[in-house]
Length: 246
Image (cartoon, rainbow, N blue to C red; front, side, top):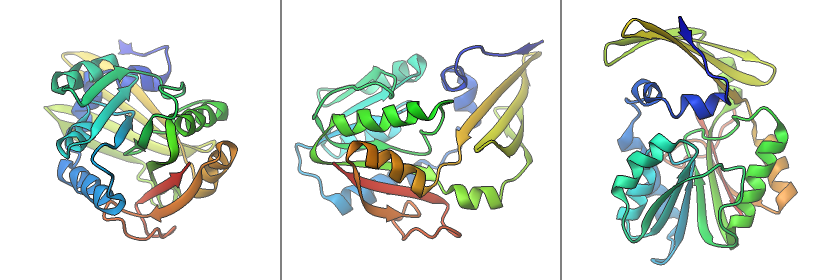
């Protein structure tokens, strides 16, 4: 028997413990280096308010808060927010929230959407609604930073299949480009039960993001291709990191 989910794929997959098992080897040092680079570059004032949009279990929020900033983390996954909430303090709070909806108006100095936490939706209007909510949530002159994969490089170098072992679970992963999406089929067995999940992420480019920004008054001010804030190269860069200002 294979377990399948009826709700939106990201709602079920991101709330599954197996999601965190599969991606447990993500580089936390690299993530912290990226945050350090952003803080050094923008030099936020001590009272700056940050929103970590699609925060997962809150690792970036927690690290930002350790720098002394007021940080709010939101995510659609109740399980992730439950885990993150164990680290709450007077300047660190977590909430279950759908990023397609406005959280607070004219409130944040910085909104961050990191490690490809965008492009999941079936309809373009949902991505547009998300960017609109981000723009409305920023203070005037506030900054939005989005970190996405470089779709042009991914399409050229797409690895069709691989097997990863995490906690003695063998994940069989198949990838393909279909109808503008990077599709990832994930199959595995645990405790005698078969599971199947799918990731569907739109292969969004710089011009796609610019169209969303133009609709809600955000202006691109910086463009990088890596967590070291190196320049973006459409053929060579692994990441597409955009900073836009309200």
